[in-house]
Every structure is written in C-alpha cells, then in structure tokens.
Length: 221
Ligand SMILES: O=C(CO)[C@H](O)[C@H](O)COP(=O)(O)O
Ligand SMILES: [Fe+2]
Image (tube, rainbow, N blue to C red):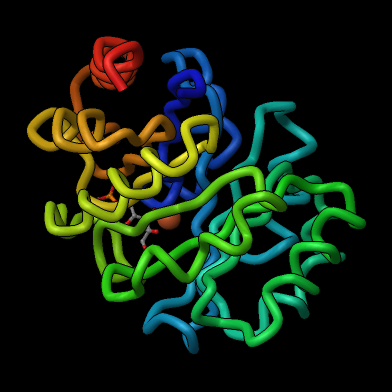
C-alpha cells in the first residue's frame, strides 16, 4: 500500500489569502494541496479555474492535486498543465472517452486521477487503473465542503485496494478525526480534508493524526 498523503482541500481556505494559506498548510505537514475546481454545470457551485492555479504556482512548489468537477474535462487539460497543476483528476461521469482523456493528460505532463461519485460503481474504473496514478472515491456528493461522510462508500475503497494494492486511493468529503479510521481501514492512503483541517485549532495535529492512522493499518492490508 503506498505511503500516506494528506491533501488539505483549499476549498475551505481563505481564498483572499490563498498563498499564505498554502504556506500554512505545507508548514503544518500537508503533502499535497487539493484544489477543487467547479464549473457550476457538472456540480451546482463555481470555485476556481486555471488562472488561480497559475497564480498560486508562483508562490509554492507543492504538489497541486486538482479535482476537476467540470463537464467536458478534456477542454481544460492544456490550461491546467500550463498553469502548473501537478495532477489532473477528472470525473468518469463527465466523459465518454476516459482513455483518450488519460492520454491527453499524460501528454500534457501531469499525473492522472479518475474520480467516481458516490453512486458510481467502482468497477467502472477497473479497466483504467493500469493507466492512471490515482483513483478518487468521493465520500460526499461533489459540490460543497462541510458535508457528512458517506460510510457506505467504504466497500468501494476496500474492493479497489484489494484489487490494486499499489494504487493511490484518495477519499474526499467529510474526512475528520471521527471518520479517518473507517477510511484508513478500508485502504485509502490519500486523505482530502477541508473543513476538519481549516476549522481546527491545530491543523498540524489533524494532519499528523490522519497520517498516523493510515500508517497504523499500512502493513495489515
Ligand atoms: O470535492 C470536494 C467537494 O465536492 C471537496 O474536496 C470536499 O467537499 C472537501 O470536503 P470537506 O470540507 O468535508 O473536507
Ligand atoms: Fe475535492
């Protein structure tokens, strides 16, 4: 099972001080920064686009894990690559040609992630796993931070981990000190958390607790 990676969702940060918030998260132990991109069409919310990634990239070298909750994800690959995105994670529900999109993302020089919404069967990603770097199993309906963790998505994580022991498996939505155990035991190793980290008195402690919980199950799976 790959190493634990903790990826604060910047959706919960103060967007007016994004660079400072990014530095704060890295100082507090974040491995990646999770950048939630929403177009108001695939999900009923609008957040950021490539220009924001471009600005942020001028202030930090940290790995930018971009979660594209957008229709037509093929349309934005080059913009995000030029802007300095490290990983481009698209929703399998948003494209009819995932294989071509994966190749396009790789050609643009980014890592590739495929995301599945809670109701999407995990089997849909199995044929793609040999070509991707990460699978994101949503544990809320995409669109908003601060929602309740959907524990009924854990069997999807477990099945994916059993089939692909070395794959980066990311969970996203409602992760906190009260839900991290379930995600770790199911086999997730990349933890996205916005609300629980940014609302905490000590993001550093939350991040290190997440990492310890993943490590504690690492060798059992
Ligand atoms: O993809 C997302 C929303 O669609 C966010 O990454 C996610 O909601 C973060 O949630 P939380 O604040 O509960 O950690
Ligand atoms: Fe996300």
